[in-house]
Amino acid sequence: MNNLYETLEICLQDIEQGADLETVLFRYPDLADELRPILEAAAGARNMAVPSPSVDVVRRNRARVLQQAAKMREAKVKPARQLWLASLRRLAVTLTVVAVLFLSGTSLVGAASTTLPGDKLYPVKRTWEDVLVWFTFNGQEREALEIEHENERLHELMELFAAGRSAEVDFQGLVTTQNGNEWVVSGVPVVISAQTELRDGPIGVGSVVRVRGMTQGNGIVMAERIRLLSSDAALPDAAEEPEVEEEDNNEGPNQSNENNSGPGSGNEAPDIEVTKTPETEFEPRDESFEGVIVSIDNNLLVVNGIVIDISAAEIVKGIPGVGVSVKVEGYYDLSGVFIVTKIEFENNNPGSGNDNGADNGSDDSSGGGSNDNGSDESDSNDNGDDAGGGGNSGSGGSGGGGDD
Amino acid sequence: MVFPDVILQMNAYGTQLNHVKTGAGQIMSVYDERQALTGLQKLDSQAIGAIYDQYFPEVYRYVRYRINDDTSAEDIASDVFVRLLEAARKNQGPQSSLKGWLIATASHAVNDHLRRQYRRPVEALSESLADEKPGVHAEIDAREENRMVQSAYAQLTAEQQHVLALRFGQGYSIEETAAHLKKNINAVKALQFRALASLQRQIGEVNYE
Image: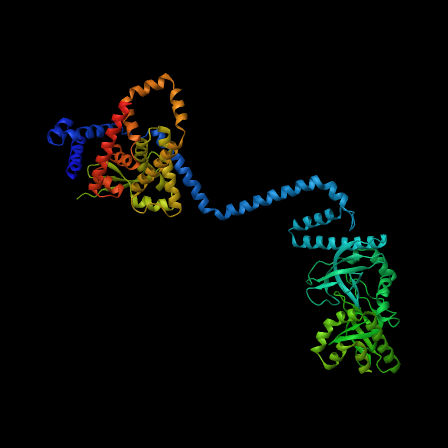
């Protein structure tokens, strides 16, 4: 059989070189009958051969191939740029959609702009605010917008208070006062209950927090949850509140503060007139008040729920101690801490000491749980500080008694 | 001894070619396969142009031999070069023999084409043939003999078609065909014999019909 294949190949080569079929087969008489149809088929196969493509075909397809090569080169060289362009394109589409939504929903947003918490369109107002913040890429503008929105929250609260409406609110601000279970956050009285959830760490005066709760008819917010925020979180610019300014002029905020301090300190702290929201355009103003020390942490004292810093104070007389009555003069700094310039401890007066003890006792009875909450931070600090602090953390009343 | 002078010139398609001036004064284009392969890896347009000029006619002839359709043959032949570019981009292109790679790829492309064609409904094909104009029939009559061979050829296996296309369409020697098929020469001779015998049988059947 191999001989047949070999002979076929020889015959094919001979024919290819111009030999005649019969001449070729004549040399292989034994295989001629078998090879003839095969060689005829081979002739047919050879006749099928096609000429080279025309110049047009070559040129046309050359252009196509080179164009494809150029595309591939481009794709290879600029993948990063194409990704960038793709993301830019996505952004453009998003912005377009937002613009369309803005144009079509302007009336809706406009209608929602004056709503208050509890209104049906209020979610539209908040969502639109989020959208505006989301698409503000400049850091300063974004911060200003966030502050503006927080101001709006306070404005809404004031309107709710004025209308005596109860609604679920959330706002953020600076804790300026902690008087037992009654706090003041950016000028808003907030009441803590046993159900209030305190999140993300100990919260003290000067902390930036986000409050969620229900407004009450008496102008307070019953807190459901208070979350500690980072110190650089946006704070409302209370100075922009006209009502707050008026209250400042009239020493008005003390109305709420008096309400707050009333149950906690009884009649012993009638002169608190300084629990107000720090203003953005800060101008230190000398103020003074009297009160009772409820905790001590190095140079930071808490007097009637107000943090006072005595590191730069001139001590006129007396020795600091928990339960001791004090008279202080000083000013609030930007963080809401009262910087004491002059302080007078009245621990030499046995009468006042007894009063202090009674005061502390009343504090405990009126809001023992909240007092503990309020002093958690100072407790831990006290433990690391001194033995006196330890006594203090145990009980305000007994601490006061010990000091006495 | 006279050394040939190497001259750089541009061909008709703008491709840079090395031209060799022989001692007799004749100028002969020299295609540098190694240089072309290096350029291909970089998707260099001049190298790709040179490769195309060198091999497109051969690839086209192979494809056209196997497919009796000018348009499809043109598309498939240029597709083979696009596949070459894609392979080069992925560093999966030919390392040594461009021609071997191109013909092998052309063979796969034709097989794919024929497979797709085979899946087409036969009835539709028959209807289209029945609707053809008389002029087309006249052309078919003029090529009757060749058509019979082509019809018979279309009935062969892909491997048989491949070996006949290389041997009779491309005019490759038995050794060259063996190299393309990656088989030994005796195996190719046997394959060639069976392919021609099969073609001859198929021609007889086409004649009978």
